[in-house]
Length: 350
Image (cartoon, rainbow, N blue to C red; front, side, top):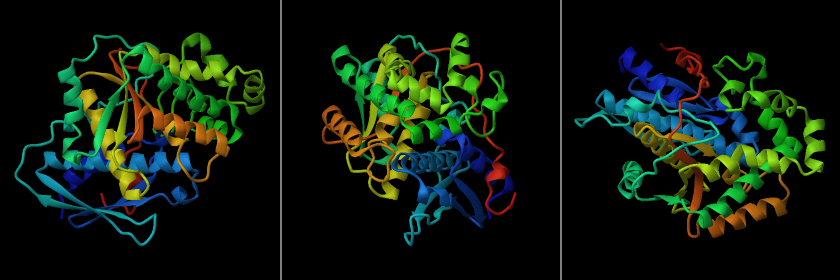
């Protein structure tokens, strides 16, 4: 039986993982030396982009558990029941004699920094290699593709803008995006679930206009006038273009199975923790990858096909997981909070 304090540490580490719209898609239960992750049944009905984001976030939580367990001298043996898509993920804890993972101290510090401008200096080749080396414990399947010169960065920024524009011009994507924003908490406070507006990096003079964008009739009218492209550029392409570094985390193998998505989420989290350890500000851009996924989509086939073609040109012979911009910036004034770990326990055992 795991000590109660260890169980709390493991759960709190999982809770601090990034999650789709700051809402975790799983619950937990302990059985002796085993932790079970119970995926949210809503995943089965999710659209392709939501499905991708939810499994990726579960993978990130899984990696946080693995890293936190190392501090307590525990190794994780991970398996998943394959009877259905929503089968439990089982984590057995085995004692080990090894040093704690150096990323453990960064779990609670990792966050999204949406400030408009990141500053330099740029990372050296050795420093970039060190970020990639942080992925080594997960095997050699992962690569970072850097887009740090103007010519290679332009097409990626165009792709980011196109994907983001769909979120302002498509009714289903618009509804999903704004449903996750907690306008009820105002522009000064955080929230345990959902995205507090104050964490979105919106300039004070633009907050009123952004709040109005949640109303679909207005967003639709702006899209018909073509203004959604400018909004999308501000949200994605402009900050990406100006950042010291823009990179794509990619997999050498296809991300078609649930197990592959979980591994991708683990890789994403290790990269993000490694960047945090180096004092880097980081912002992920998920839409361009998630909206290119096969499955039920709010996009029509032609729009999704354009995203797929663009990715094949940008990272040939690889499969994108996430786009990140990196640099240096002051921390955000408000961070998205997290629920208490005990609120996510499947059966109350703490």
